[in-house]
View (tube, rainbow, N blue to C red):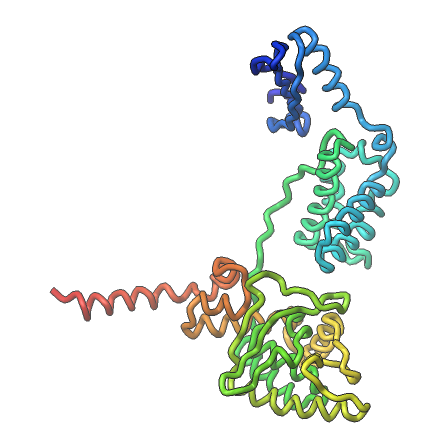
Length: 394
């Protein structure tokens, strides 16, 4: 295989107003030894060709030189600096939280005090192999391919940003990860949904019951459900719910996942009836501690009219599902898959389902639930035949 080395090429681009030649120098260097892709920089010089060559070579040496502060920078320091820059970019709370876990629990403990400049592609591959085989902190084996990919994204971005700032010469995190085969969305079966509704009937926890009703009937994300306030619900002739915000992991309100996630959803008659009764029950619960229910009260509130965090609500739902021996893979989010699956199986078009779910595009909905539509091709064939038989008779 051909080896690619740093090169400088020159192109004359006329002269300036005083007649001095204008030269454009293009410096190209490979991203990795043996790779065909180059990283390029350009600079303009005004001088005769002989002087330009000397100036451009000095410029090249300056680029190739590793800054003094970077020569002794450890991978741990590189990752800490990257995380601080991410905070400045105002990334979402969830993204920052995941980055923090990947950096503090996985990347820094493995590489310890290793210098950032000394990392090789082989060592990156060894790191990912370790994560897949022995990466769990409880000693029960390795991490999933999805988690390893998340770690790779963080490490790659940290090195990429350092290269762009000329703090490092190259990015060794160029490993191609195995393709991740995403499992089909798992809905509750009809029997499981009936079993869940029966379990809900015996619940003393009215807030948990309300959360499950919202999940079953509206296919909400858990942050959207926990972020609902009574001002977002209309229980008139056309009962409607307005998704305008979501509760973040840290307990603060934020914008929903995407622009399309801000939406309005018509309520089912059963959910409208439930919410009318539930509002009275919640008011009675709050009245016992002298609190009045208002439009600003969270629909899924605690006993003092405060919010219930997404983690706390997930734990309550998980406890209920375990108690009633549901599939261990099922969670609140699977209620979202359940609603989408039932609608598609019963003839609701993909665009309407997308709008109810709040997906950014219909293609996301189609990609997620394509397996649900697999059996629809035979129905489409029969529909086409019926059209021919009825309207295209010779």
